[in-house]
Length: 55
Image 1: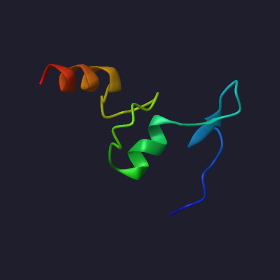
Image 2 (image 1 turned 60 degrees about the vertical axis):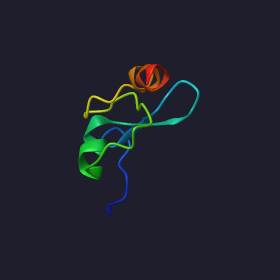
Image 3 (image 1 turned 120 degrees about the vertical axis):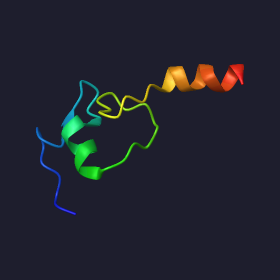
Image 4 (image 1 turned 180 degrees about the vertical axis):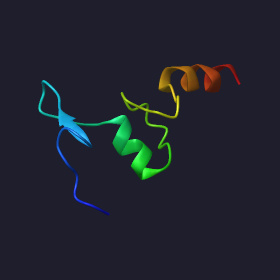
């Protein structure tokens, strides 16, 4: 895999944490179902948790 590029694959948020971009997620090729801020696959962690509670 190619080295990550700041500003393209990720950025650092106000707390200094690395946040992956939608472009990075698409390059990775799958959804990890962690509720990532820029998930291009439409996964919403809160919606999944609610579905699991009602099941």
